[in-house]
Length: 131
Image (cartoon, rainbow, N blue to C red; front, side):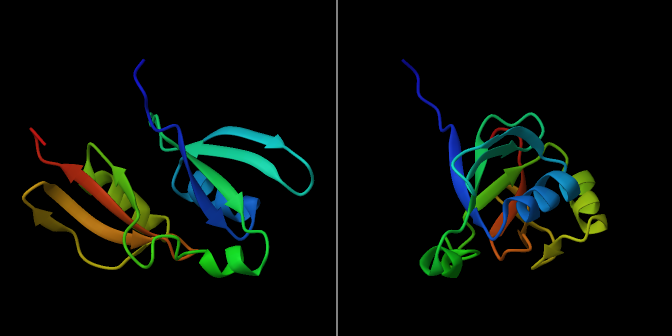
């Protein structure tokens, strides 16, 4: 049986803040928002056409609060692939997304690092053909 990565948890300070950014500004799709035992919710989102989901996880307690934006130890931990870098880069800039650098060309494709409002570092990337 084939396997695939279904979801990755992403700590956020608040479910609605996560939804406002990822769905409201970036255009991710809301897959599911199911109430669990209060105040928990099962909130799944995905980029348009994406298979792997992000599970928005509201930080609970001081340890999780401290990890918001630093789940990957300061490294880029999330990679948003696009089929049109220039289109999506321009749309993200227009939506107020903070890029840490100008786009650059690498052997694998075009890339730029950006941050969500919670401090998580992402790559926006368009792979070169054949990659």
